[in-house]
Length: 392
Ligand code: NZQ
Ligand code: ZN
Image (cartoon, rainbow, N blue to C red; front, top):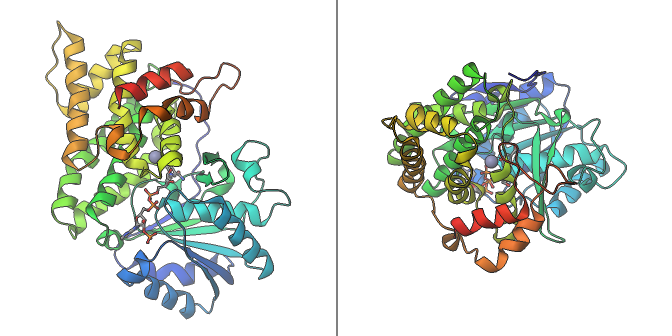
């Protein structure tokens, strides 16, 4: 187990009716002038917008609205939000929506109190030291941004999608009411499930050897997601199954499952550039890539892949032929993604071979000197292109 220093500062307020707490809790955190940030209208259609406004009004908060966040959130709207926060002297940001809205709110939060260009934070030119407080009301269990220290943003100049990871940007609190997810279309539900499952897979495939507790926590989370996915797709208002999925999404990405181990994350970095090329839903891009990342890499630690197959997908172990067990496990993951309606090939999400080299070049590298990404088996541009070829 590697040394770690674990902290997650986001308070989670979970359950039916939790939205009514939004206004009073913001007041507890000394918020008075709130930027209400949201997406393209799903919250108005579901009625959540009205309930949030009511709660904010009941606490006597001043509210300025900024809607219009699109999936794969854009830097330009973040800059608009920063301007509004400064001009109107706002002191709190409430994001109501999925990962894109939350990530956009985090960008506004750090940008509003910074003298330079907020994009500096996404390109490692500067590191945020403070933020306006950001809280969230989650409507889409997926990205885990409601309790993560990350914000992922697309700069439309050059179509680059980049993460900012910093402890400063943990939301102060997040409200998770599973009923707010009933209105999700099946495809968005499935993309979210795919993303949260891959958040655990990225952490599971580590080169650390003695990580039994976190292996078991990861397996429990993956099995819970896999068991509840068909339930929420069959019955969108199944409260108990929605609750399991919603909490799994946060647990998957709050970094507890990362303690003492070093995750991989190459698939995420490659996928971000798929999304930047063609506005692919993040979870769909991951579903295409991850089984192929596994096929490309399993030889670097076959035993870990056998363990994944046996413990997560209950594959019967062939002791004479570990490779068979591994490939059956990878196929089981592919079958799971297919069963929830995820694509299996890049051509299904509009990404042809002509983009492969460019995607490889644009993928954020963990080791810029060596030009590699990922920790399990650091990948060069050539490796990335090979994985994209396996995925075409
Ligand atoms: O914009 P609205 O109208 O709200 O519609 C959204 C959007 O079109 C819709 N939606 C959300 N909740 C709904 C709903 N529709 C009906 N009912 C509801 N209850 O769903 C669509 C997709 O929303 P989006 O926020 O883009 O999806 P998601 O939550 O999957 O977030 C994806 C973004 O998060 C980033 C991804 O790269 C991507 O940009 N990630 C952020 C991470 C983080 N901050 O920690 C980590 C992740 O790995 C990921 O990279
Ligand atoms: Zn993700």
